[in-house]
Length: 505
Image (tube, rainbow, N blue to C red; front, side):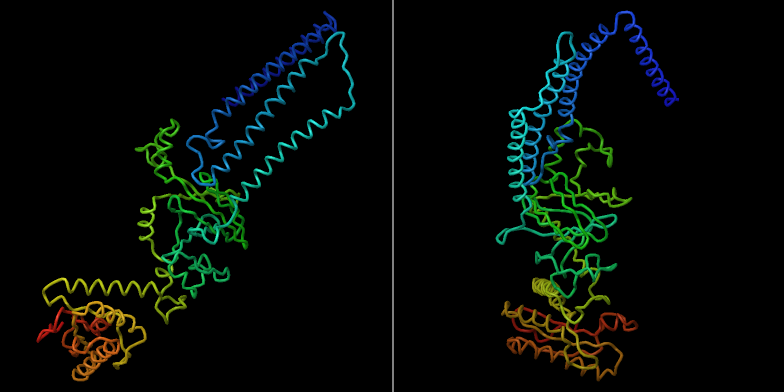
């Protein structure tokens, strides 16, 4: 129905125009063509002047009304260090072009009125004017020169890479249809080496797992950054052209398949500070589309988008960006898990099965020291026994495996730092063999561990060893997991001299 009404109104408007044209033709016949043309020309001049005033008022008022959304004012001011430079450059360009816009339109419509056809006046033909040519060529050239030079200075400052002495963090953003995958460095602060030929379902970035810098890298689906910290974003694409766009930070860089790009910026407002700024504007005092119980400003987030039309799912590449205070960021980062350790370590795709990683060595050392310190804090002896979970032997032998040395070295360092601590090594086996053979094997294994500690510089007077065979199981020997748990070496720790008798477990 509404469509029909619209068409009816259009038809009626066309009919009115036709009738006006007919009335004009009749007036020409009655009053003479010259008089009608003169009146028409004069009215057209007035109309043009009126249109000029209305047009300039409308464009200026609409510019002012939409300045926050279209020009980055108010709550949309830049939240990055370099963004203020971009905004200043854009403001200067806008002021100059707006002045030219207003001035040229005033001249355009004023000349149309002033030089309208009038009786007794004749237009003057001027074929050429050198002064005018110089003015309207020279003045724009000078203005453009200053704008271009200012733009080049801004470009060089904004697009420069990090310096050798800069303190910064680096992350990688990889675009694909239709999402972003973000890679963070771990404790080492370094992103590991990548090779596109290694890309597969479990290795989206094509990380080279033989490069140990990859061992602690973190994979995320969003961006979280500390405020006032320079960030270098390594930008890549897996399939088609994408564009890494952070509108609130004035960051925009193409993600090109096969050609890594980068952008360096420094966030200057946390998400909380930005939201507080939004709360001062009426347009954000409305219910949130994601949580109607809150205001829009309370749930608004910085965003990462793709600024290329990369396919039908282009819209879904929008991701949340969070800026935190430094301490909040460090706390968040501590909760993130290494992708390699969580998904690759110990699988068929792990090329490092014959070695321990630095992070694993550090983690095991911390666990051992914490357990030993906890055991020594209590006065009772019953809980002073630690299981050396990572000390193992060759099958049916007292020969230590290669990886056993890491935990035994931790025990040596602990005993050197705690000179008043004495230890007893206790060996245990499962029930699969003869009891006498098992006892002998467990005693030899405990002795072998004691000899390792002795060679590491621990005084023999602080150590003893004993084998218990299959006498003290801690799990059900009916299962493989239970038997494995029973094949263990334990470390009994105590301050001062060893007691005459020690707990058997």
